[in-house]
Image (cartoon, rainbow, N blue to C red; front, side, top):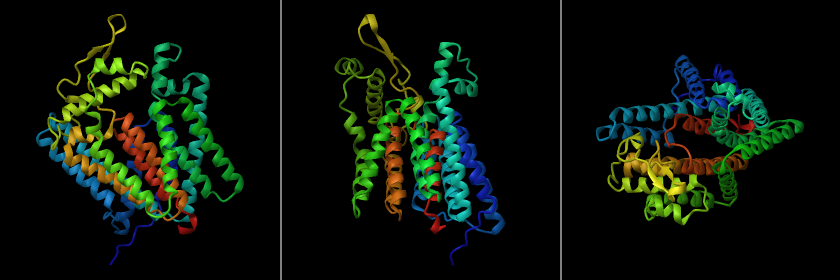
Amino acid sequence: MVAQRAPASWSAWTTALALFLVPGFGLYLPNALVITLAVCAVVRLAECIRHGAVPHWRQTPFLLILALALWAAGSALWAINARAALEGAASLFGCALLLLFSLDAAAALDRKGRRRAIAGFFAGCALATAMLLTDILSGGHLAGWFRGYDVSHVLQQELALRSLNRGVTLLAMFSVLVVLAAWRLRSPSHRWAGRGVAAASLACALFWGKDAVVLAVVAGTAAAVLALLPGRWPWRLLGSGMAIMVLLWPLAVRPLPGPQQIWEQWQGWPQSLQHRLFIWKFTTDTIADRPFSGWGMNSAKYIPGGNQDVIVGPENRSTQWRPLPLHPHNAILQWWLELGAIGAVLAGCVAVSAIRALCRLPDRPRRLVSAAIFGQACVVSLLSFGAWQSWWLAGLILCVWLINILEPLDQA
């Protein structure tokens, strides 16, 4: 007998409020995304307890994330910092629970609850876009206020502007979801307003964002085009592409030369990208020391030699590069470095299962939007942030949650 799902009598309201707050939180207070998801999960848990229901936990992505969390916890036995490994494993387990309760709440929403959630998200994105536009025109006054910086000082203004990098990345992903939200609105005028908000938020993100955001949007567009292919071709191409990247990325980066040679051979490249190549080279060399078990969850910041700066360039304009500043700025390399081949395969299976799920979505608009978000997330994960950063994982969970909420209203 299949257990009945608890109705979303409370979750309908917390979901709408959360989705209104999420775009602004993501832009200015990214760490608050975890708290927002946790509050919604607690409310959903209370509903399940009240009705004696159990969330449908036998889902492949959830089980794979649990397996990855268990392997991460086991890596504490040989990790450089056992406490950091256990904390990382606990965080990953918590993300799995947040995903589980988010999906359960989305599935329990009725048509009215979905419309309320869509309206909340749409309004939140419009407000966040207006706030970012204000920062663009004012030189970061809102960001400075949120972070406590005095933007009249050049250095503090720069810090205030840099604090928006994470949020702008999330806003670029949310803007694609606004397109789908607009598609679900009933009134033609509301649809056009939604498309306008989506265009404005994406334009602001591209104007403000770094090269990684632009590349992410390009990759998202390419992934959406692949999702238009007939039959099983999207699943074959996206799934096999992800598997190949996970297995071969360390081997592809390994032949890179040393730091001075990188600086000399690619002088025309942005220095941040040159430095990233050196980070990847150092990471792959370190992976080779423990290819199967890895160095332990959350061990990237503790790798021997990772904090010893290297001087590159000519004497009159030399610069310092750190071999491994906190994390490799590449999720696949971080999987291999910290969790070894076993952990990399498990994490890759999570990604492939997500691709399979998006390719099996019944309606085309959600498939296209899901593929676009997946393409953006891949580029950002391979170029920018740490693989286990809680705000980033929370942002991905929110995208999955929204995709499930934004199903056709006649299916609610």
